[in-house]
Amino acid sequence: MVDPQLIAPVLDFLPCRTPQAWIDRARDPANLPLLLTDHMICELKAAQTAMLLIRKYVADKRGAEALLAWLEPYEAFTFRDGPEPDFVALHRRIGKSEMPHTDDPWGRALIDSMVLLIKEELHHFWQVREVMLAREIPYVKVSASRYARGLLKGLRTWEPATLVDKLICGAYIEARSCERFAALAPYLDDDLGKFYLSLLRSEARHYQDYLALARLIAPQDIDARVRDFGELEAQLILDPDDEFRFHSGVPL
Image (tube, rainbow, N blue to C red; front, side, top):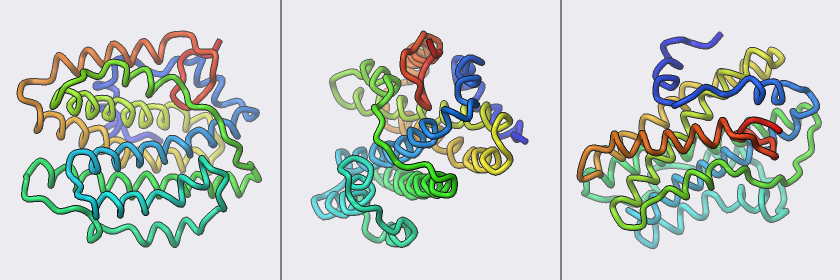
């Protein structure tokens, strides 16, 4: 059962709920392999997004190389037909000791939030992979949805506005993931439903972390900018979509 206190702030933040037509498509057992595959890839992309923020705005060369080394085995398997690594062993290697250090308070906040997010998203990645293996669902590459790409079209092109917009986009992506886990869980079998509900707490915190970082770095109030991206996000969720993915719009 979804914790109302956990999901209520997410629902208040998002401009719309997931349409029932998407839930109906997602609950169809025939679409489960595609749903899980895209979900797994989305977890890796979330980790990549956090890594890129650290590398671009905080990391020195050594820290950047350490971040690349963390994700390389996951990326090789997912995008380049590489061998399937021991994901549990890889997860144990991730630690803050390898991260870049800074005396800047905002940079420190970014590192702390994003390193935790990377660890959690990669953990979720191999959890989804374990679900797929248990159900004998092979990994097959799928194309990305229009969702993240559509949000990023709204980015401003000068700093720190670009950074603020990236953080707001990150907040919406994480919040939508959380909302869809909660919306879909009641329609799934018990094991998968419990797994999706187990992801809610971290996903709910992730969107709040992104917003907090945006407010810290922005030179002025960001509420209007958040609303702008909310309108764009709602359009991507409510418009007809010819692809079915974890973040896709209303299925045609």
